[in-house]
Length: 453
Ligand code: NAD
Image (cartoon, rainbow, N blue to C red; front, side, top):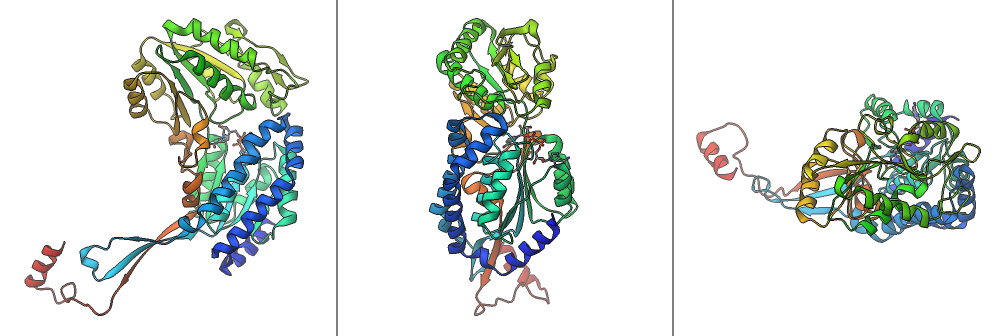
């Protein structure tokens, strides 16, 4: 595929100024919505073929997510794109000052496989809403979904405006040699560094949506039933293959046993069986093997069963885990939940602060003081108090990592801003032209300037 040529066509198209027109943007967002809804079956089937994700999960965590984004931009585009008047300082009187949200130009979105539709199309929708052209490179690991997206989009949209590029590392490496105006990447910190390096060659700005080990802290004052139910749901959704899933639990040692029992009872209630519509497969053999090696059978409190033919790993809780265990050395990204304990809350925060900054963190407690300390003492991308995962469903919150878990953010207005340049314009009247800033400089002029500044 001649990516260079496609990008050249996109640049020519961007230069026609058509994408800056709000009616044009809305027309294509509406078309995208229509095309996605028309192809719901195809998309659900393709994701099911990739890793057995049920129609229920695909609709709630992928399709409806993108539709919600499209609706958000259809409803808010006018106010997001509106030039914003700001105050003008004394030195610049008489004049007006405005900020213009300007599309960056030609953008590239690279997606991950775990929510193959949402993680490619959601940033793409923000890029189009902000008035850019876009090339989307979904993950080749969810191959059927990648092919379905390419078919649906490339058959319905002009490639000089929007194009889905199929391919793996080789193709992505080729694409990354080209000069884009923004690269939006979702994936691992390891590949994020490759993207950042390639972008730096052209001084291209990036958003890097990466991963990490997201902790969930459970204190003795927590509502255990609610905590266990929400953690089990958030952890085993998509069989743990969720960037914001709680990676591990830190529980107050006084309440560990009763909390473990609550976790177990919800796993049993939620019917996570191989082939059940409540549970997803592990994406491929490589990840299946990686994950099974992380299960220390001596530490299994619940689960631990696997089936290689079905790429099934039972929801597994590990207890008596230490920071030195293999399962604590990497992001798990699968249905294994290590449980560690702490004696006092501050000690738990210190342990988290000693790790790379995670994408998310969660706290279950009834104590206002613990809530305050959790938010102010440790750094992480974002998170919830008394819930997991759900913060990313609120478009009024920016979603992104910090440090090792990413650069930049998106969702709602923040996605629009990620794909826009804030251009400052000072427009000055010509009828007033005080003399004091111009040479020749005099003491009198300096006194005036001192008064003004
Ligand atoms: P990955 O980094 O392996 O791949 C992501 C993308 O990069 C894919 O499109 C892939 O084709 C491409 N890629 C892979 N190797 C490359 C290379 N050498 N050169 C150029 N491109 C390359 O990530 P993944 O396995 O798809 O996803 C898992 C990771 O993504 C986890 O760390 C997870 O936490 C993270 N993630 C983060 C978010 C978020 O929103 N922050 C969401 C989902 C997943």
